[in-house]
Length: 438
Ligand code: HSE
Image (cartoon, rainbow, N blue to C red; front, side):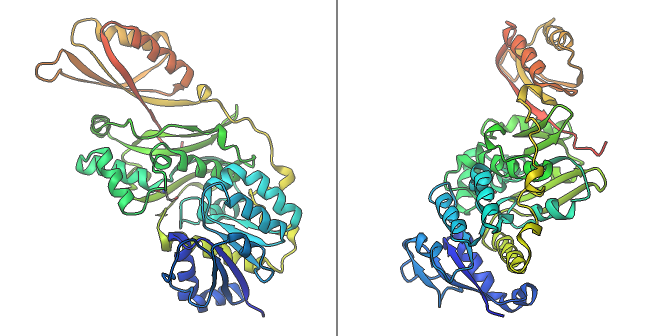
């Protein structure tokens, strides 16, 4: 059978990795795909004579539209990243009747609805396994492996850079800025590292997971997003004393009122496996009604791991070239006419437990004022720690763990605590998830 021709957009870390994996494992990949797969055309800027491994025979251009419009290309692999021109290139490829593979999480999270509907109309596939959790085949696991189940919730450590920072802060007591600089130097971080530390990268990925878990359109603008830049060394230490680890968690849950989609620092009991996922590694914990909990762990970034997912998509598309377009795996897991409009919950309506840390005057009555506010707002306290004032200071640190309560009610209580004369500075609040099977 005639080989399948690939047009590769981008020859950076992931593009170069993909060309190299396709060349190095060519025979094994062809045995799996049933056809030979060859890169015939690639687009990259400022490459000079520095061709990545596996691209020796490939025609290389600076104009990515040349690749997309090349009539000999069967599958366009978009590894440029970002919004534009990635969106225009992918839409043009679809318009030209080509299948698309992409690792671009921002593109799918923000423009996926438009892209999938164009692909549906043209009968082509858009595959995006590498967009979430790098090399972990999590899209396939949810979309195909778990298709017998009703998914209840998904919790993921889906940004390696953020996890690396939190791990180093905990294990080595290192400073936030110092660890971020190292993550950038190691090439884990996004071009704009605020995407990592402020949770935007994780929000892109979470929004995709939520859609394929619950069969709703992609709604990136409804993800509540809070970064890790305010997590202090003290919080990491106190959480540890209470038996928890702080992780930057993406959480999506189907409740009877709607769907939660949120990314924020979260205390997780240290005995959970996912709480022990350290460094740049990613993990996704899925609670499904028939399987129960299942945990998927692996490299969420890097050239070879991400290329592993990109090439798996290329193999899938190759296998599907002879399949009836209406009977392929649907883009968002559910058949296009079965995507529903379940409400995405406002953060005020989300229920979680909380870790609170505040500074208060070390004098009689203060603790009772605080617990009174909690009681008035029906917030039940699970544990309380008081750290005596440091030498020469007048305020003590109070740390509390609460039971689950609506976010709006917690906001009200925090506002009242801020009004107490005895309390100084801001109340630090970190949400807590038990992630238990019950
Ligand atoms: N910046 C991302 C991370 C890369 O650190 O996880 C993979 O999406």
